[in-house]
Image (tube, rainbow, N blue to C red; front, side, top):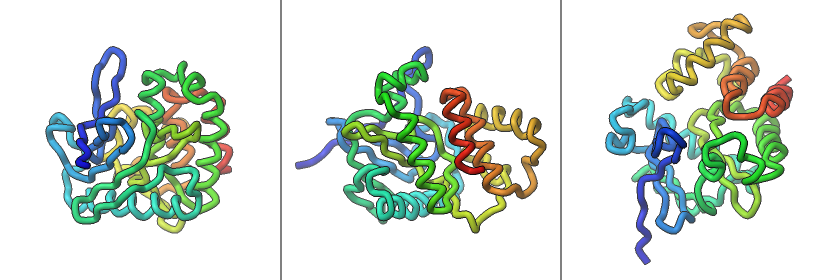
Length: 231
């Protein structure tokens, strides 16, 4: 049977259909059961706002996704979607899902998270604790980076994930795949905590900065609990 895939968007109230990811091209099967991360710089999908245009940078992001997603599958298989297939030639990862992503299911509104998954905070914190136990720092934390399958939260988007030994990192090296709005939020906290945009900083500090930059996407109490994991 031939499965048809379409571009996958987040439907944001007041904005309409917006790309689901800044780096890769997102696809979904017509029955909403298979999500595809296609590491292809598709101008039509990104509507001319392509973030990662350097092929070598896209290759790096692809390899990180494959490496850390499969690492999570091997160590914590219940915390990531089932990997149906990885097409190394076409740079596509096929994931088993159960409908739109967590953010889309909540109508892209923080007020609806509990309606989608009452214990989402506990589940997401457990995923973050798993990352910490593996000495990983994951900076792609947008709520569209999660799917709900059989009542369980599943994590994706490991293209912006680094091992502990890779640090410290320079934030400005990664601005190509950090949305301009997110950069502005980060700069507010950078000034407050006295770190640099252009000089190496320890990853535990950057992970907490990452959480702070998502204060508009998650409840404050959740952000503080997430930050405490990296104390």
